[in-house]
Structures are given as structure tokens and as C-alpha cells.
Length: 488
Image (tube, rainbow, N blue to C red; front, top):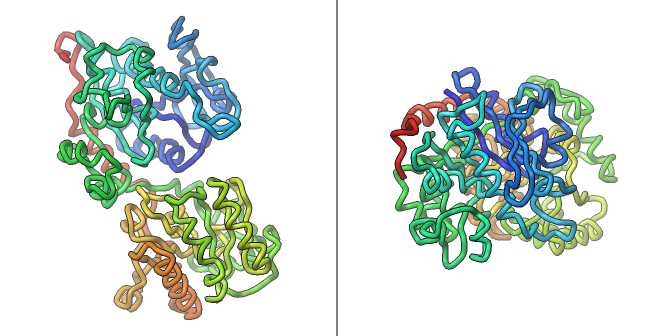
């Protein structure tokens, strides 16, 4: 089976969040199952710089406002197809935002161009790779099923999958962009792309995709509720027979404490004492005094969705509980400032680094005692999976993929030796603080804590089971229809 994965970013070429990790890991996980994946990416500068053995597949003059080329290339074991359109993607910095932090005004055109490129490949118009399935990720690729529907009369029709990594980002744009998308007038309707008078990319993808997946079973249920559906719950309930949840995995070769070169000292479940060397290195890098008190870390976007305001408001009480906290991330300037002020009040207990550092994120997992993930909603989450893998005990809100991947340290689970972390259902400052206090108490029970670490390190957080679920989903999809059979 041949699958074209369509995404706006992919680790290690370009990463702004967990989407990139999933897109980068899934092809390798599917290959042993007989699924050949190529990934269509926009030609952002970091992508273009990383290409190996690039070969021109097609040349498209006047492609959404400028000349474009389609390139076949690879990066290590990753097989790529890249839309080289400098007028759309040759921009430094964040792929979605300008230097002021605002969305690029032509984002709707940029990702319409990516989606239509995927459709042309799906139609078989590009030699060398004719996919059975087009797998679109998030709003940036969500027009793929819509273009197939409206522009595919008389053409080959591959099956489509849309994966919702985060429903909060929907690709909703003013109706004035409509004339730039190359779609017929009838597509701007409630049963098409129209969404409250605007153009809804993710809404269109949900409407037309053959299958819709989310990145955890619990999130798949949450998004069909009024509270969790972010305005799309009605449509998701309408398509509920097409909706399923497949929990994310992680690359267990990249994230392996026994071989991780980002650590001062590697270790495994039998040599947990070696983690102390990494803990000391964290203290050095963050300017904290050496201390055996429990060290919590957060590696996160600093936003209200991630519950960072709850952390900022309880910092004094967290310190009073006996815990310390180190933070790596960026986001809302007001939350960044609140965390900095907390670190100023407690310079020996709290430290903050604004920004992102991949190597430091590995060290934090390898040396911190616990990782704090207090999200208000979390489709899947990856940092808690890294924490499990590294014996960095996750302390998580009981939502989405966090609920699906962490076994709470209730009395029964602790006694049975299966607890892997701490969950809290009351997503408030009080609920978070109670979870931290529970974590500190468990940490002080050395043998109990080590059993939790080892149970987490033994959890299956790789892609094996999830890749099998994706492969089975692909097999259930309609087979590609030949051009003469295609209808709209």
C-alpha cells in the first residue's frame, strides 16, 4: 500500500510542535507493515536545506501566484516530495507567523497550494508515486478531501484520511480569500467550505474525508461533546462513524535514555541512580543550588491551554510543598512574565528558560524527577510519553491522551506496582497543587517512587501498536477508483 502523508512540518526538518514528531516517526513505523509512505512538505528554508538527492518531478508555472516545482528527495530514511514554491514558503523563522508573531496574511493560499499539489499527485499526474491513500494532517492539509471532491470529476480518486492533532487550530479565514482557492462557487456552502460566513479548512476536511482520526481515544470522544468540540462537535457527531482515536507513539530510538547523547549519563531501568548526574547538570544549567528535593520540569508551549496560568498562580505553594520547578518553553508573553517573576521570588527553587532547545528537553527528561503537564485539553501529548520512557514521572491532567497513557497512582495501582504517574481531574489551581503535594509524598517513599519509574519505563510508548492501527485503517478504506469510475 502506498500512502502520501501531507503535512506542514516534519521532524527533524522543521518542528514547531508534536505534529512534526508524529509525521516524522510514522513512515518508519509503517514500513515493516507493508505501507510505503512518502511525505509531501512545503519547501520552507530548513526543509530545502536538508534535502538529499533531489530530483524534479514537475514544474508548475503560475502556481497560486508564482512558479513552483515539485521535487522528489530524501532525508536519511525519509522519502519526501517537496513543493518548492519560493513565493509561498521561502521565509525565515516560524512557518506560520511573521516576525511580529502574527499569522502570515497569505496562509490560506500557501496551504491551499500544498493541498492541491497533494491532489495532483493523488490523481496520478506525477510520475513515480501514485498513492492509494492521501493522509492529511491538521488544517494545513485539510483541503485535500475538498479538492478531490470538487475538482476530481473524471479523475482517479484515492482514499483520504484526516488526522486532527489539535482541534483548536481550524484554519478559518475571511470569505474574501475564496476567489484565490480555485474552487467552484457551489463549494462555498454549508455542505462545503462555508463556516459561519467564513472559509473553514478543517471543517471542509471533516466533511469530505473518508476517515477522521484523532491522536487518542479519549480525545476522539471529547471532541464530539459541546465542551470539547470547539464549534465542530455537531459535524463530528454527524461523522461519528468515521471518527476514531489512535494514540500517538514516540521514536524510541531518538528517545532512549540508554543511548541518548544529550544526557550527561545514560541509564536504564536497572541503573536509575545514574539519573542523579543529569539532575546535577540541570541544576548547573539553570543556576540552581544542588539539592535532593524533588525537581519538577515543564517543557511546553506557555499558553492557557497547557494550564500554565495555573502553574504561575500556584508557584509559591508549589515551592512551599517542597518541590522545585524548571521550565523550558515560550508562548503567551504575560505567562512568560508571570513565570519569570515567580523565579525572581524563589531564585533557589524555580528557574525559567524562555525558548526551545531540543537537547535541553532531553536532559530535562533524563534528570528531572517528574514532568508537569496540567493541560486543560490535550489531544495526545508527547512530553508525558518521553517522561514515561525516561523515568521522569508524569503529573498530568485527566484529559485526552494524558488520561489514556498515564496510570494514576491511586492506592490500588500503587499496591499492584502498575502506577506510572499522577493524574488530577480537578483542573484548577487547587487540583494542580493537590497533585503536586501527592507527587512530593510519593517521591519521599523511595521504593514506591522507583517502582513507578520502572513501570513507566516498561510501558509501550513506541509506534508498534499505533502503526498497526493505522495500517488496519488504511486497509478498511475504499480502494482507489480509476478515472472513468470517479464521480463527484
